Structure formats: C-alpha cells, structure tokens
Length: 455
Ligand code: EPZ
Image 1: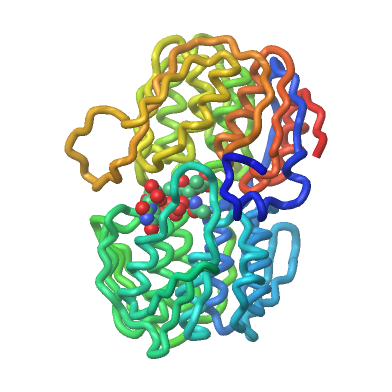
Image 2 (image 1 turned 135 degrees about the vertical axis):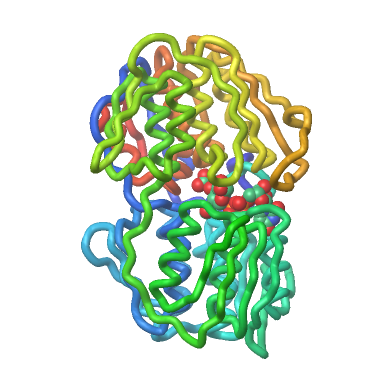
C-alpha cells in the first residue's frame, strides 16, 4: 500500500509497480539525443474527442505511456474499436458506442483523471455517463466542481453515489454562459468537448489557453466544430448537429522537454531533445537561460546543455499559460539546489506540489517549504487560497538515498537528483513515471546514465 496514493489509486496501480525500482549510480553527465513524442496532456484528450465523431479518427505521435493505455481501455469499455497503425498511431472506430457499468469503468480508470472528460461526449451519444472515483497524482485534492457545475449548466443532471457519479441528459444538452472561477485546463476541455454538439452557442469566460487546449480546439475544428478564441480568455462555441472523425498529429510534450532540459543542467550534461519547438517553450527557455543553462533551437528539436560556470539562483512563480507552468517547477528545483545562492519557487496552481522536496533534503538539499506561499498581492487571475513556496539554498552536494516516487513530475525530479548525486540511490514505484514519460529506461540508457533497472 503506497501511503501517498488513495486506496483507489493503490488498487489501480498497474501490477509490478510496487517493486518496480531502479538502482542509480550518480555523477555521470547525461549526454546524447532523445525524441519526445505527443503530449500526454493533449493525446489523452484527443482520444476522448474521437468519441464525438460519427466517422473514424486517427491520432499520430501518441506516446506509449500508461495514461494513454488507461484511456484506450476506457474507450473500449464504451464500445470504441481502438487499433494500432504505424508507430505512435492510433485509429478509433466509434460506430458502436454503448453504455458501460461502473465496475468495468473503474477497472480501467486507474489513477487517471481523464474519465471526467468522457461526460460530454457520452451524454451526447447515449444520454447518460458514469464516472468512477478519480485518481491522478498526489499534488492536491484535484476537485472536479468546475466540471460538474459546467455540465449542469449544459442541462445535465448529476447524481453522486458510492460508486461514482451518474449523469443524465434525457432532453439533450444546450449551450450555456460559463465563467470559470479559475482558468482550469480540465474544466476548459470539459466545456469544449460538451459545447461542440450542444444546441445553441456557449460562451466560456476565464478559459485556459494552454497550447494543449489550442491543439484540442484544432482537432475539434477539423471535426466540424465552430470555435472562436476571443481576446481575454473568452472562447465561443457554436453547437453543430454532428461531427466527423479527425486525423491529427499531437503537439509535442512541453513538460517532458522541460524535464530533460533540467536533467541536462543537473547532471552537467548535453541533451538534444528531438521534436521540441521554441514557441511553446519560450517562458521556460527564459528561466533556463537566467539559471545559466545554454540552449540552441534547431529545425528538428532543441539542444540543452550546462555550459560550465556557476548556476544562478532565480525567483519564479508558477502560473497559467503563458506563465511558468506548474509542471515545469519540480525538475527545475533540482537544478536550483546546485545554483549559487537562494532561489524561490512560488507554486500557485496546486496546494501540495512541493512534497517531493522532502526526499531532495534527505539527499542533502537545503529546501524550506512555506505552506502558505508568499505575502499576497493583487492578482490578475483569481487564485485558490492554497499556495506554497519553496526556498532553495545552493549549491548543496547531493548524496544517494532510497526514494519512493510520490507523483509523476516529482518522481522524475528524484530520478535526476539521483543521477547527479554522489553514490547510489534506489528509486522505487517507477511505474508512476511511466504514466507520463515514454520509455524512460531506454532514454536514460541512450543518455549514458549509470543504472540497473529491476522492473
Ligand atoms: C492539467 O490538470 C494537467 N493534467 C496537469 O498536468 C497540469 O499541471 C494542469 O492541467 C495545469 O496546467 C492533464 O492535463 C491530465 P486544472 P488539470 O484543472 O486539468 C483546481 C502533469 O504533471 N480545480 O488546470 O486537473 C485544481 O485543483 C499534470 O502532467 C478546481 O478547483 O488542472 C488546481 O488547483 C499534473 N476545481 C487548479 O484548479 C476543478 O473542477 C488547476 O487545475 C478543476 C480544477
């Protein structure tokens, strides 16, 4: 039983993850080339969008990660035929979509949060949807109130039971005026996936505008949807009667790129990340440069390396796009343990995303987490009242430790800390990293890491 996971998450952990560990000998710079494929946080939503199409869809550059396998399993439970095309290509035949039972859904939902996004498409196709208790990482309580409030505004009835949530819409769904309390990525996707086939127009205010949202809008437009992104985080969706399938190549994974860039800094390495593009990484690249990292934008990717000299401390605040993404801060904090001076990372999106720093302190880092963040100041985007700040004093020599991976990005951070630490580390529960980093062991091998994997 992993104390960091809920009972549902522990029960749903894929077999073998509990003893799934890697022994790392630190001190070797990571050098070489790795390829990053489609974004975990787009591909999984694009797969759900296929449910809306009357004709087949094809998604390209799909990463081979467990979050994709979870959604694939869920789609098949609802009768969607998912088949493999060329490498990284999935085909979806949605000609026979049918209701599913909680038990079957639960068996596939695992630790993923994506099931909540099935609501709109299933309500349109079947007039009902069943959602089990949701999983996800241990980085906050991950509520879905914005999602359920939006679905009610579209005309759905929401019934919660011990099994999960049962939604019905016997009279179909109609357009709505929805203002999100916070530019939530998931809630924005919920509205998009529901509004496209609702009767009438939907106006969404305070929407998330991350690149993955824009890529999902591009997919929906290919299917026949009418969606316009207005100034000031407003999105207008004119409901249409039907949608066709799509063919789309998923946007690259910005989070994985930022993770490997941080790994290059931490290990004094030099990593070429094939598939990385500058436009979606600009905020990260600015911080990477300020810390003292070097990068070179090339046609087919970005080269990240430690140019020598001392890393410099920075103060950053995580934010919604185009700010510094919350998913980028965990690997970067490992690099900041090597910076000469005091850095501050103010996490403003999740209420418990700095817990992973405890393991870094066991390895010799000097990180103090302030649970209530920094003194407030008037904000452009309404904040939730949970905020945390990490104060990192460097440089500190890291030594090996035994670590159990707590969450996806925290786990990657522990991995790169072990790769730079003196001596050996044993990192267990690696299966959580498989949720979001495709073929992580092959990539570590390609970059010359010194490890033994006991998967
Ligand atoms: C998505 O999560 C990503 N996950 C996260 O990436 C990412 O960190 C996050 O967006 C922010 O960019 C996927 O896309 C699968 P939110 P999501 O709704 O949609 C609160 C990773 O490492 N909130 O934007 O769940 C919520 O608690 C993962 O790849 C509510 O209060 O994020 C959080 O504090 C981690 N009520 C804030 O909003 C709701 O109904 C932002 O959440 C929904 C969210």
